[in-house]
Image (cartoon, rainbow, N blue to C red; front, side, top):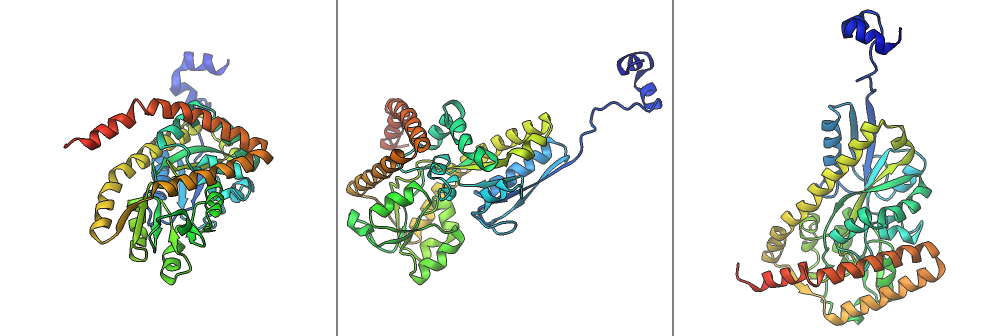
Length: 360
């Protein structure tokens, strides 16, 4: 008698008595490790990994747990791709442009100068070719990516002097995100320093850095950079919407049941929505506090923005000329972006400008 006939004739009690327990609910417990590139103090950037972990545990009724490790606990802040490549961890949460030393196209996974806003980035990845293109690159290193959160449009950074012309950037020692942005700023004369955010305060205080950019008011305030750099600029062109990602080891993911794979994707969506909206909630209040404490808030002059655009275009052209994959991703991004800008001109841009002009 087969299992189905046995259950029909004897019921579940008979099956158990016969020692033929059904396979349901027999799934073994799963334990993963998630390393982030950020300190625990940043409950936004590091915190989205914690939100992911908590959601996985809740959705699996505790059968799937992900331990979260801040930068330096398991691996260095910028060591996540190497750790995934050699199967040392199951997943990481980081910014793709930290790894442009391996391939300049990594930058498109997070943010590039004069690139996407948060909404545009997500639309490109989910409904355009974004995820497909980036996972073509990521697959070479044994992982794939899922968006973890987006910071939204970032600030232009902290400076110990005013930045009035492109010439003011010459010789400036500045902490920057990696990749195309660093290269384009180098064309303006900046001496780029790609270092973890936690190391910046001391470098600014000692004068080994002249300037630094990180995220926006809330995270920047927590870093305390306003105490060692007076001028805070906006109109930054390098990160219209920086998309942090969960990098997931392909072998580890393949071993999961279909249910747990779905839980991973669902938990990432929960973390993304929570973290991205959290920035909209937190940044305005932090900006008001910073200005009240003496921070000098300034907008980059148009001549500086135009110089930045020219420099970025040169870098894009140089990489596209020698790297067919970079060119493919860049051209796809730009084509998608042009349509987004066209739509924005008659939708959110107009609405935002009208709202800003009204007394509400």
